[in-house]
Length: 108
Image (tube, rainbow, N blue to C red; front, side):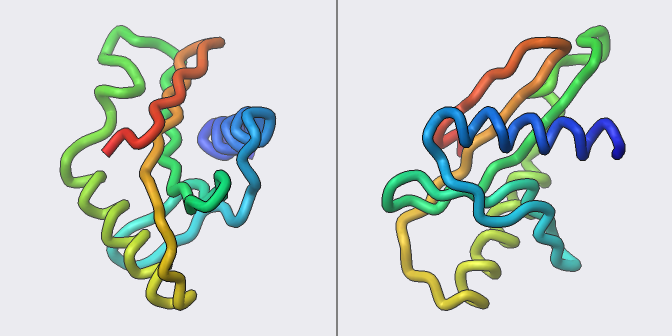
């Protein structure tokens, strides 16, 4: 298991402990990828997981670019259309640095 996969698994467990329900992981399309899809009450939550073992080149949150946000949004819209879902959704970020987890709800 790669470091990225380990971080995603850890993020999934963390979110489940916070009351979210796991739906799917690593949904890929040619134009973008969604790390985790979760449900929280009536909302579908598209989660981007960022992990950095060291912060000397910037923290996990700084690793999320505007282009990535655009690709994630596009992938989420495609997922909703493919699955014929007309539900409220949001985009969260799990930023992991060393042994800390930061959960940004409705991050973008």
